[in-house]
Image (tube, rainbow, N blue to C red; front, side, top):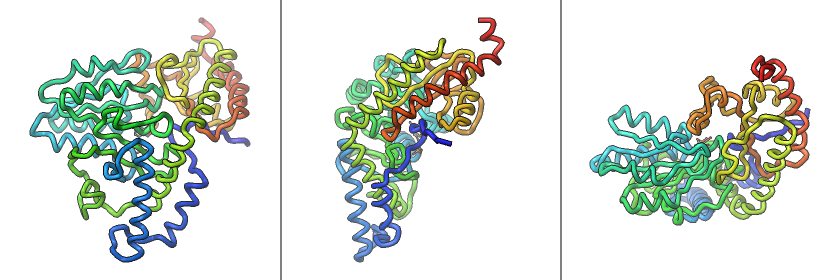
Length: 387
Ligand code: PLP
């Protein structure tokens, strides 16, 4: 059976160039970058090169990039690191209600430790209003953490404005950039962020590698202590093969960003308009908000998201639903309920997330099979018959 992958916000295939760059690092350039001998220095040079490639993608200085195990660890280091380094100043944190679990659960954990968190709501389009952030600021606020682009609905937050508010109030500003990096231009200086999380496997690099941008002069208390790697910001021998792959993925993401994303946007638009033409009573969440070019979150009335995902999978198409979190629970998505959807509506949603290896033929195949699947599921729905 032909398999079609439309779940790229979950993870992406590695590019062949990434794999090719990593291979010799396992068997030939396998030194420990902390060693002073030749092998060590070879590995150190590879690490330096990758750091430059990743820094360039987000317009950071190389010294501002800390390599670690992925987006989740980057979020943890940013939030816990600032919470701990600034606790003498205050214990109040501002975040949004649509953050990824890596941010949300970290903030909830800090609440248990005595920090106070303001959870900012979003509009029905999934956007944070910077004025709400300004209003939430208190004399003891130490950190604002608002994601750049949302993983479920793709909305892009007004970070520049929020960054200015944070800067004027002298409060650290972190953003989870895991979904935005490689999909839209990112310039950490323009965004006014002090900390910015990125992950390699979302941009066609290997899994288990990521980076945290930490602006010069910002002190985030290390969460992993040991040999003082990464300039004392994150200990542990660096994952050199993974980081080399991440570097190549970052370089390719930067060089191909505009052309690839234009192509991906065309495919996404072809999918959305095709589905709207063929299926009645479907809605595109955050349709008119600024959003990622690759993401489409669609709500299908009278059809259950899980049923749609499973039926599509049986036809060879991989997508995800907004209704279940990674642990497979049937809780409705906190993102969809935050934009005002009822639990039932949230359960009827599907997320398509594309990458530049997808083709128009793949989209056309989805346009052929999904209307039939929806018809079949709706026939089983008593509510549909009544409506
Ligand atoms: N933040 C966002 C917005 C994400 O979408 C993800 C992954 O889905 C993460 C953080 C976690 O990244 P990682 O899988 O590298 O730990």
